[in-house]
Length: 462
Image (cartoon, rainbow, N blue to C red; front, side):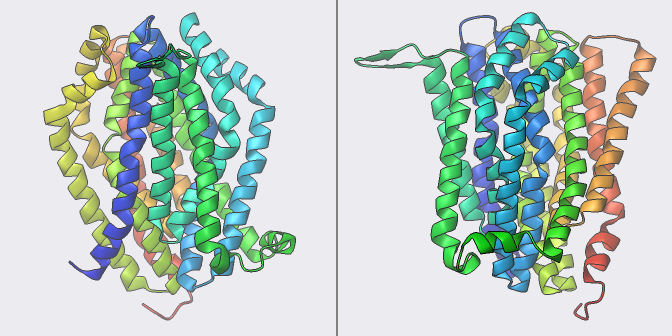
């Protein structure tokens, strides 16, 4: 095995191990809701809409991880560890500021989004209950985005993995225990029911935040934060690096908003199909994206290594990294075509015991097979572009993907009429694929200019 491939696996494997637990969290939340007393479709719908509310909030600020990771990797490649420390200060400070604003606007935000989201009254009430509990995790959730991006940029996927594993393990255990109770010997507690799912997430986020801060302090305190003081923090917000930080993150913020428009648009449109198709669509999205938590491990490796080699001014190693990352990513994608074919139904049955939801989901299984091949292109390019901090191209690709998603939906809807049945869900899934394809095509076309030319302009090393 070549040294490059060893470096890729060193970065990718820990991220994959952590990412494996990420879909489990969402699946456990849906499974817990689906097995609580009450209407399973409404309970799953409540979690789905509640989760959508936080997707709408937090995905807007995904640039906190993306921008922090790319800038950190390039500073690492230059050997500028003081700048790495300054980047983390900027990222966490911005995270806390945004969290404060979110807490202030939580009530009007909830009212506006639920007003625009057609759903049944039981689903709306459950979503409100979920939201007003989990919203208090905002400071920890947003800060963790910056911290995990920083770990990746520092070529330290182990610390990112440890943080994710802690958060996701606590989330799973706490959500189950707090919702369904504890029944072990003399300890008999019935639990909190539906609201326990939200409290489990709240506890998990703050556990991960504390752990990540301690990890930074003990592992990087002397290297990246020498003489840490108020003056160090003040200097982090001065000079040209701050302007670059702001420019990159502005583009990435627009990109994040565009992604939210697609994903929330999917949920809001599916909510008009009724509770059964809403819950089925939510479960299908969990299945569709299951493979991405493996592919993302290699995208993170591409982000770290691309950024490092661009920081070093090494064009050839950047090109070789991109090639190697895609070989690994496409291998994962092909493997998951087989996984979906052989194990799609058993995985589905883990998510819900509701026979109607299971049977409805099975009608959409054909979409599982092409998903790994289309998705791995879009997700892997994202990692490469993040490492190069090619934020403008990422922004433009995502804007075109919004056009592709809604263009496909409204065009086909005009042909089939205002149907809100299984056919409409097929059209909606097709629109989602169109958005992925637009991202992949745009970034493939601009690769040479944005990754191999512009970052090396003015450098002599090739």
